[in-house]
Image 1 (cartoon, rainbow, N blue to C red):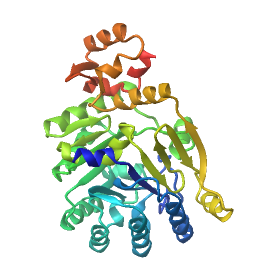
Image 2 (image 1 turned 30 degrees about the vertical axis):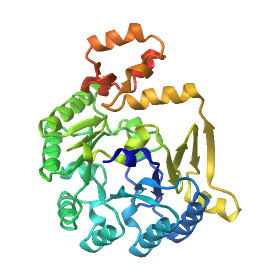
Image 3 (image 1 turned 120 degrees about the horizontal axis):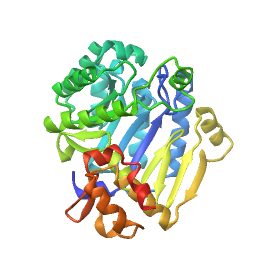
Image 4 (image 1 turned 30 degrees about the horizontal axis):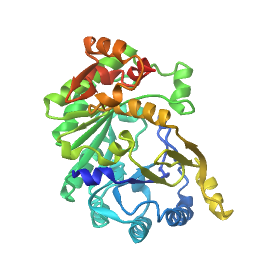
Amino acid sequence: MAAEIKLKPGLYIHIPFCIKKCPYCDFYSTADSRLIPAWLDAVKREILLYREYSSSFSTLYFGGGTPTVINEHAMRELVGFLHENFTFLPGAEKTIEANPNDLSRENLKMLRDLGFNRISLGVQSFDRELLEFLERRHTVYEAEQAIELIREAGFSNLNIDIMYAIPGQTRDKWISTLSRAVSFKPEHVSCYQLTLKEGTPFWNLRKNSTICMPEETDEEAFFLETAKFLKHRGYLHYEVSNFARDMKYVSVHNSLYWKHHPYLGLGPAAHSFFNNTRWWNCKSVKQYLKSFEDGNTPVEGREELTDDQLRLESLFLNFRTTGGMDIESFQTFKRVGTVLPILEKSNLVKIKDGRVVPTTKGLLVADSIPCLFL
């Protein structure tokens, strides 16, 4: 992917609708599809607020929620309005998240016609029992069929989302899911550890001891086996949870977040970042709609980051990727002379091409390493 594209802002649209909410998910969404028409009108009004945000965008990302639950008319209207008011660079990465049993030949053709060139498919597991435990609304067969349809439709950039450290998931079951995923030769694989957040049904089940999460040593073993398995099959482990078959398939949009580049988020609960300012929208469709009815914007909060805060965030974000941080910037942090040799000796980081980069073992504790320099 050209360097010019990577340096431009990204555009994220939050589509907060699901047919049903997964019990482990803490992303904002609602199952009330009656709100879709009003939400669409409100998003169009928000688009108009930001027409001067950037001369062009390098990426477009439809996330959720489940973007593929909205109908063809709404999808065409939204994408058409985006292109009327925003400019996208030639070759811009345009991703849409999809649930397997929302996809058909017809709507995949529609998505291609609208310019989407990357699908992120939420499979989570190729194990029937674990899919049922996670209360996913697709079957293993439907996931496999969806992948075949995606390829038939001409998509040559596919990400498969899968999940490990699920209660009841053995390492053999996980390796089986990994094997099935790579058998489809996806250009990108995202492997997430199941992490329970307060307020979700699974959090309450764990609190009541109804479900038992894996021990920390088991979670570490899952992570290291994942990295080893995918490396041996030619995938680049470029971020804690993300693997690409080639550098050209690294997620451009997500890389904007990790590299502290500007991005604009539209829709309920969406976040934005520009220069030293971060702002976010209210986390409710109804409140989002009401803000426009009252003549206000849906922005709920805003923070101005100091130079020191930006440097600190950069440290945390860079240590989630195998790109790491350039040694010159790294030297500005306290305790470098004491801590860095220890990290190198422990095989948590290494110096490569003038950068301090985390090893696979370092990625395992990526959020902890930066704290040592504060």
